[in-house]
Length: 274
Length: 240
Image (cartoon, rainbow over all chains, first blue to last red; front, side, top):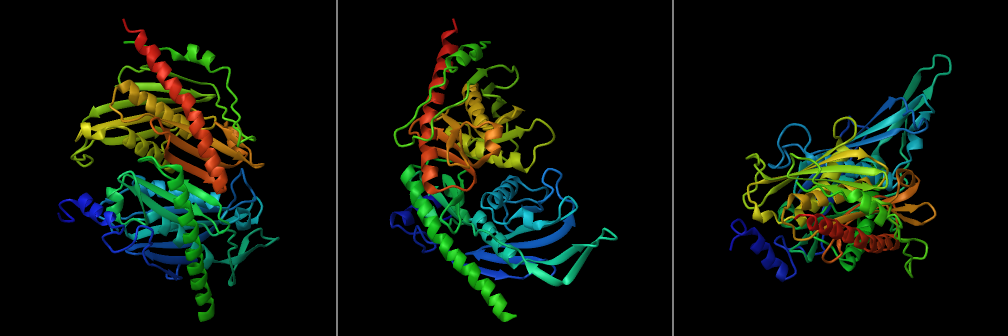
């Protein structure tokens, strides 16, 4: 029995011993590395690697008029792109369903977790506000896309610096002071943990692309630092009982603490390096 | 063709909504709006249905098992495609996310290995949105799949819970209640073991609130499954 001829049997033989083909335990995440300010032309950027999955995020801030139904709020627009570069399953052309569903999920997480206060992005009510374009691009797809997207977005937003903007009372034009830059105020730190269900009963954490394709269901739990749930995203697949769900939530809470420490460490090291 | 007009009979049956207050959950109750459904109303699709929850109304059509494009075919199973058409404009990113939820729930319920290299297409047309949209889509999809006669391992139904700012849990919220809520949770429950098949949430909530909402949804799903059973029984008892 080989890994290409019978992939399901191959994985099952490992799961029987409570481990996985790459040597990890069922509840173990792959090593996560984070790098910030990689894109100098962006207002904020970050790159994250969870095992082989590599995702980069660039934040560009532009000025626009606030929406008419919320004149004191700015915009934050996430977009997840899965180019053909990252995996052979994505073809060139308009974004496929997975990319669009991921973009919608990230937009929902930003809103649910109250990550950033949209009122902060407004410069002058009904006249001028910031729109933050968060472009998240996957460079290497090896499973667990949603977790990586959330981490990279959080790190990029913490890294982003926006210039001071004032409106000249006489000319009514915006004046941007590039010398004075300030960081964004991040209220919460949502972190996601993805799980897959194998054979309707075994739950494994942080799936690789191969494990995702062989799984029967996918689950992503996003928690914030106060142990509140921001998203429980299970798009379908085989059913999940209450205790298994509770077990996943507990694992997600521990993961939140690990990743928060990592992001804080990286941001601190940037500040020290200056 | 047998047309089962469930609307009148079932509107009256569900008019007296039962307010169930559970011992542990004294602040919330499993209270669904009036719901009704009609099957086999369209002539071209293999199966069709409407599902109405309060004022929210969805029309579903199912084609399948039918031919599939070679690029999309799977060698040992049927390919499920879901299209959600909004009332105005073209489907956008929000519809894609809903389509993913509906598609994966249908894939788990249908016996896809019976129709390899075929496609099952579910088309959902929004008629009116007054809250609990994703739930109504899933319920309409399930009734349409039943109407098409596609083999399924279990049925599914969906319930939406909204957590208000005071912490009260409202089931089957209207659009206004959804807007004023702090969190919105939609669950799809299966008919055999009453476990959670699909979960889609917005807003933040605690773990206890999640468990409470799941319990309430499971209780409410019993009513909907009984409705499925009654409507199918009623329809087939009319055939001479």
